[in-house]
Length: 446
Image (cartoon, rainbow, N blue to C red; front, side):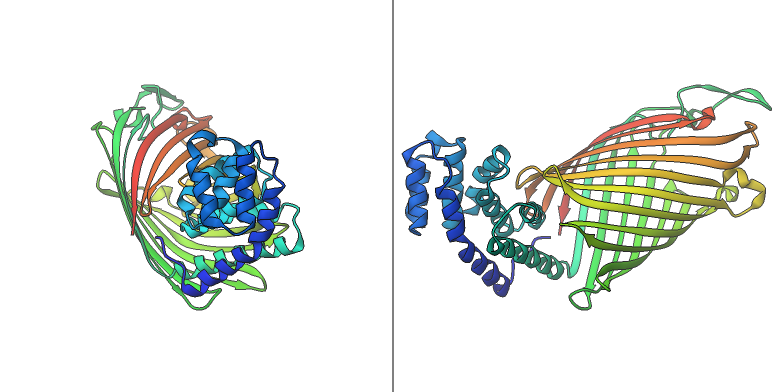
């Protein structure tokens, strides 16, 4: 959801920009101009003749657009004359060509803010914080970051809803294996049901999410969300999937740390029949370290109740430790995961397992409308007892790569393309599979 800043916040940002404008223009005037035209635009800006500077830049845009010094002059002139929608594209080209140009990046961050793209503005200001600047400039940037945090805190109050429709292709929706027959020591060769074999199918997915946030003060809030999705396949043997995701949570600050807890409930249905009820408690804590970096962890205490196969039900404990830091003009997150799942019935301890994993994610804002996210996950599972059918102790290694490319088409519309690759290597052939899917989705936020 997009909200306009209150008049008080608008005045704060305006005052900030007025304070820093002379410094920006001094920097700009020292920028190596390749033509007298750009120097003339910078001169007009220094003289605070913003309308004339923008008019001159606009008259010559077709001829000089794409040259770094002209793009900087045009972007600053457009920003100074309240034409951020025109300034963004020129300033983005300057930042990509010359990442250390402080004036261009600050003006770009300010334009993102004025246009309501708080995530992009925050990334740019966070990058500026790590650059060498005067104490005055450093203070302005830090105040801008705080203004974004306050606006995000207030904007998050109330209802946040979204609906998404996606169409795609899945190479293996049932997580089946390639072989038609497997060898079971006690039975010899066994033919698998068709649903246990790899099949490919196109699919559609409908998703809806409804969330409500109730701030208690500047640092504490209650929140709840309820959502569901349905995935249907064109191939008859592919099992349709339905799920619900319900959350009730609380977050706050305690001794300078971000702390929170939430209850969750996530039932899953396959072909309309209840398959799994997953529920539990998550407790998390995080703290800022270094410059714009943070570290933290979360503990999950959950239970997986299988509707028709009680023997598979088990208690779950997870510890996830993470470190997040700006890098490569984006945000990186590194995670280490430790898990333990124990069967409720000691007679089926062959389903109990210990898990060790690592993950990496990277998010980057490419332009005011485009951004992408990459995730890589690795998980190793070692089971406690030999599997009764195979007379072997199961060992799995799971790898998943996900790439999302997003385009903010309109304020309330987000278009997404996702590629998802999965490999599960197991020493037991029944659980060894590959899977990939590609989908295109449209998301409406209201």
